[in-house]
Amino acid sequence: MRRAVASLAFALASTCAHAEYLSVGEPAAILYDAPSRAAKPLYVVSRYYPLEVIVNLDAWVKVRDQTGQLTWIERKMLTDQRTVVVTAPSTVARARPEDGAPVAFVAAQNVALEYLGTAPGGWLRVRHPDGANGYVRADQVWGA
Image 1 (tube, one colour):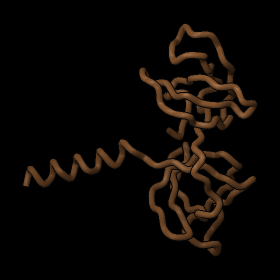
Image 2 (cartoon, rainbow, N blue to C red; image 1 turned 180 degrees about the horizontal axis):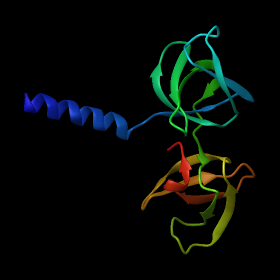
Image 3 (cartoon, one colour; image 1 turned 30 degrees about the vertical axis):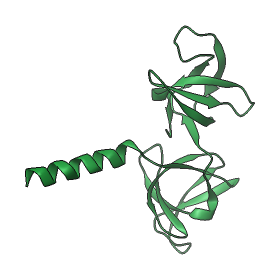
Image 4 (cartoon, rainbow, N blue to C red; image 1 turned 120 degrees about the horizontal axis):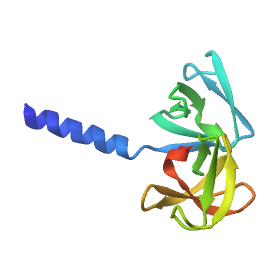
């Protein structure tokens, strides 16, 4: 019994450690309370907004947003392009993944940045919408 519980716990931890994220690919997309256009519309999100995939059906995806809210979105409204959104009042992107590195750019809260990869020490490599590249602290953004 213990072995089965330990195996299940490991499987769940492995699943959680590798969350899947997609981004809104259309100028605007509606988040619903159920997987149907007849369901209650809850929110409208804009292009590049990142969403964590919880359940993936054929035409609908159950997602979690940065607030933890669970909703449904039509799959055709999403893109595989990865983005993160700034959750801090602002974040400083550095030229290298180091606190003392030169500033590459500063991004305000709620700005979506293209996710380019993970770097050691809790940093993410990102691209600002204006094209500037840099590294931000992972705890300053959501979606990775």
